[in-house]
Image 1 (cartoon, rainbow, N blue to C red):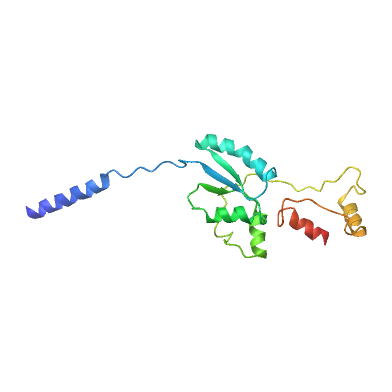
Image 2: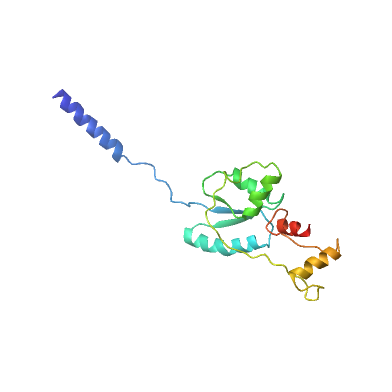
Length: 174
C-alpha cells in the first residue's frame, strides 16, 4: 500500500508540474523594431526602407523605425547593429559590399560572416554610368578613351567608400 501511494503521489506531482501555468510570452514583436541604415539620408537604402517599413509595420502591428547612422564607410551603423542585443528588435538594412569589403581593409569590432544572418533580399539595383547629354563621349568605350587622354578631369559620385559603386569605379579608373 505504501508503494502504491508513493507511485500515485509521484504521478500527481509530475502531472501538476507539466500542467502548471507558465509565464506567458508576448508574441513577437511586442514593441517597435529599429531598422538601422548605415548610410546617409536620401539615398536608395533610405528610400527603399521608408517604402517597406510602413508595409511591415502594418503586417506586424508594431512600428518599424528607420535609424540613419552614416559614417566611417558604413561602419558606425553596422557596428551599432552588430553590438545590439540579438533579440530581433534591431535589424541592419545594408548591402553586402560594405559589410564584406570594409572588414578586409581594416579592423572592425565584428565578423560580418559570423555576426550577421541575411533574412531577406529587398531589392536588386543596377549601377549605371550617367553623364550630361553634351559630354564628349556617348559609349563606355569612348568614356575610357576620354579618361585616358584627360587624366584628372573625370570625377564620379558614389554613396560611400567601399560601396557598390565606389569599388568598381576605382578599379575602372586604374
